[in-house]
Length: 558
Image 1: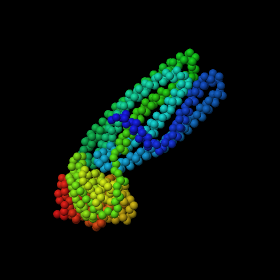
Image 2: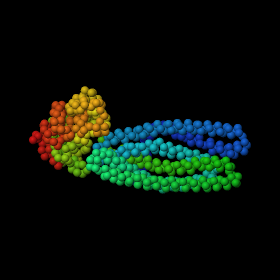
Image 3: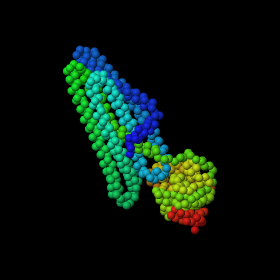
Image 4: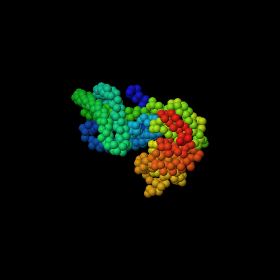
């Protein structure tokens, strides 16, 4: 990876998130500058005390200087408070915008991205990397600017006090810059490797926790433990290497920063002996020397944090650069009839053919069943109709309009979909059903519940509709989760309804009752039922059978 070629571009893109709040950053900078400038009086007043006050034993001057220093201290504390308050609000707004940009962009990513990206890996980008940037804005950048300002003040003050001593100090500083240049490249590369390793740790942990019931059922705890240990050890190994490099970096700076003051004190004392420098002047110069070597040392350490944070910024932009669905581009569907046509459609997943040149037409309000063995492409038909994926060849049309010409939001707004992989929110039964149509009233929800056969269950629950169902509906059975998903789709009241193994966890009696009710309310809807069990599709108008991605039968249910 060519870090050097992308660093400037990354920084420039990141500055766009800071630009709307530049005024807060500017005022924070001005108060930071004030607090740094208020460090100037102490060394100069110390010099004045030693050279002009102590010898004359003027207590009046001593008291005045003491009160001035106390006043400066309070003023400095006030400026630091205002600076940190402004920076806190500045950071909060920038991080909020960044998180929302990531969230909104992630919501618009293509389904194929989520199928090819582990959840734990993505969560690492959305959480860990944003937290790293928050740390960058909270501490690293503040410290960087503050040390730069302090360094500039140190240069001006040392040149004013003793130009020769100042020049000697400046000759030592290039060694700091050299060490930064030497370590920069390796630090950035290793920081990226560390973050990628711990992203894998997060992915493995999330996967193991999600599958804990399967792991326990197959007594696979040892397998899970060994798998997690492997990825964790790899992450720790790279982290240790990164820390060792950082330690070498810091030790190098300590050696350089310690050698400089020794040389300067030796030369300064010789200048005092020659009468070219006062004792107070040397003490003041030595104080300002910390304004040179201290910030340089700090900047070397800050460099590690900046490089690490830039890696996080780069990783976030990798997500923001992913192609998204164009939801607002195309035709708005209104009052559709519900006619569906697949014309010579082919589709492959990871270079494996799934659908091979299939063609069929569903008339408005027709009820069809799609059957076939696992993996023949039944669910893929639903995914293509919803534009979760794009076909390799062929056209898919609704009411004669190619779905690629329709706004994605409008297309999906006219389709109700119950997948075989039921997802429910960690919320109440009511809110999970209402997700189908946010403006639905309680009576409409109750009717959807009745059709889905949930009314008896809800009556038995102490909190009824307000019962919390846990993460992904963990407190419910598989059949209960399916019925909530059915109620959600019914409440949406779409013109086209797709049921993909939507009743597979129900007994035949319950399934038959729900399907009869569904038929009653779907006289004006196009209904597609995808199933393994023939009993599920016994009342449809037509059956389509798939084998190896091809349609081998289309006609009445036999």
